[in-house]
Image 1 (cartoon, rainbow, N blue to C red):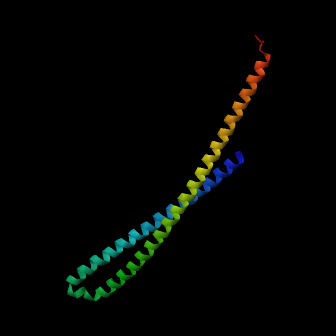
Image 2 (cartoon, rainbow, N blue to C red):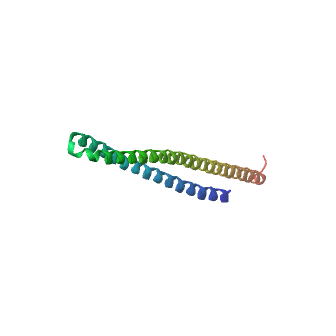
Image 3 (cartoon, rainbow, N blue to C red):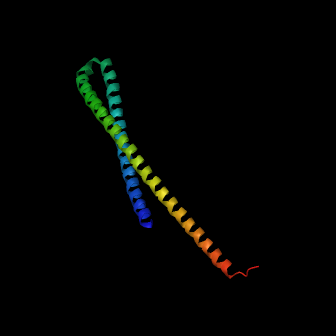
Length: 135
């Protein structure tokens, strides 16, 4: 059982490392999306200012193209965030399954050890009674 516990501990550490990796990826995608969203907001604000100025209307097409590219990046990043979130959830479930299996194995080992101690105690008491004088 000790080998199984050691194996489960090692597997759990691998699962937790994978979980941390997936969470880092999710955070990275979320930061990228936030950065692109800020650029999109800046392009929208710039477009609003351009409409107010007749001399800057020629830049409106470029701003529109930039907004279209930014929207595509936001949508792509949102999809990556959803996928990363799903991977994080799966990694959490796998890590929790390993934790549960390890806890069950530890509990079974402790129960077996308690039963062994109880059996040893009963044998000792029986041995001790064999040396006591009878009344």
